[in-house]
Image (cartoon, helix red, strand yellow):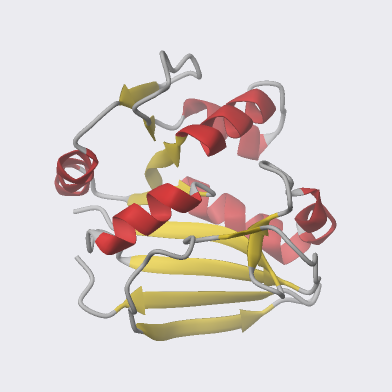
Length: 185
C-alpha cells in the first residue's frame, strides 16, 4: 500500500509561495547539495505525483523543458491532476480527475507499493489533510523571510495535531521536518 506524502518548501515566515501565484524563486538559491539529493531520492521512491491545477500548470510548463535526472523522473512518473476546471492534461503520463478526489486517492493508495507525493498544491493538500488521507507532511523550512504570500494549507482547516518524526538540519541552513498527522489514514 502506498503512503501519501505532502512535500513543500516554506519560508521562515510560513509561506509556500510569494505574493503572486507561482512566485517560488526565493527558494531556488537553497535548492542545492543535500536538499537536491533529498528531493531526488523522493522521486526515486515515488509511484505517482498528485497536483492541483495551479501547481500542475506551473510544473508542466517548467519540467517539460528541463533536463537532468530530476526532469527525467518528473516527466516519466505517473501524475494525477485534480481539477474541475482544467480541460485537459497534456504533460506525459498525466491523468485528469475532475471529481471524486477522496475515492481516487484511496484507490491510488490501495493499488500502489511506493510513495505518492503532493508538491505545492496548497488547496489539494488542505483537502487531503481534512479527509484524513495524508500519511506524512514533509516541509523544508528555508532560512528566508519573504514578507507576504500564500500559506500552505490556507486558513480553513480544523485544528490538527502532528507528531514529529524527524528534524534534519542541512548545511545550507534549511531544516527538513517530517510530521505524521495524528490519526492519519
